[in-house]
Length: 465
Image (tube, rainbow, N blue to C red; front, side):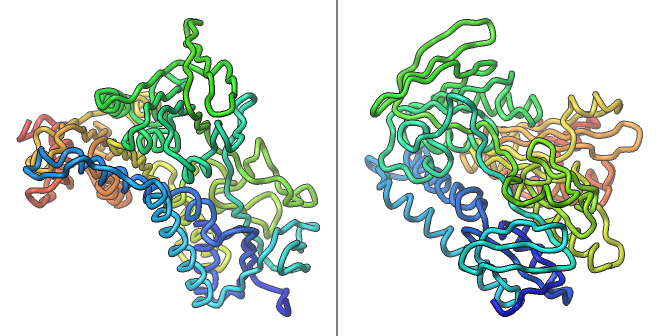
């Protein structure tokens, strides 16, 4: 390429990378982004977006089976697996094209290839746009990949990683999902809804270990009531891979073992940052267990090199990466009043059935931190909109600092809670107190009224429960 000198080069065009590049260009910085595979990264092509498309198909299919409860008729619901997958891939393709359009619109140069530092001042790119490129600032946004445990390595046949789980050639009749974080539980939810016999194996004492215990417990109760099998405090001790099935040996905390023969196993034991092959050893950038060390403005120990998103450590969420990218670039551009990202105000969403969403401290974490707290809870059964929707199971929970009235955390399980949580995120961002929330008017009839009632309950003032 003719152009090889830039103000900023972003390495990786996932959510963090392409957003950082666009914001840099908006601020008048000559910007390039290096991408080795897909614009939009794993999130858009193989993560957040296509899985939500699959889960939407599952949600509609679930509703078809419950049509009679709404006075409707839908005889013998069925699905075309190839069409479900094609829709998911089509959504990703459409949005990836949108990212390309946005980069072009903002005059960001796209360098196709794989970047490697040759000292702290330049990178060499191998691939379509091979060459040496120089910038005043480099932002590493290389994301993460699926973690692989010994014995659980994906083979693309009977043991799947997330890519294969999104593009199966046939619908398995039975599956073991190893890991119940967001990735594992979403795949478990999809396959269970589509008719597979699903068993989830989780080594911790609760599913979705980062979530509040009350929320995780209710989610597990709802899932098992629906027919999913969940084993906590358990691990996969051995896999015997056959031509078209797997014999899974599961060992519980007390040492008891059981064998399950299933069609497929999905390994969902977390992700690990992509730090290899970047040439970071030629710089002062520090890497610890595939996490690049940064300060609150994403600066590494090497002046002029920054890291954002998954590669900079948890929480490994697309929206965290995007926000970090904007903060990083604005700090580089010397924009006034740039504030660091507060990790306690980053929401987390899991799009299983039932949905789970949260922000801030759990009840247990708040107590560990030494807060004297007030806790409010409100069940979906007390909400008119939830009952009208036929979705009357769920919970909204809030945690407050008794001394100041500060909202420390909010935790939800139930239909559409991934859309509700942002109300509490905004409240925390504005340092809203319990009094402000109690005096806020929530529209009726909406699910959001449960947010209000949960706050009221923390102070003994709940009306509808």
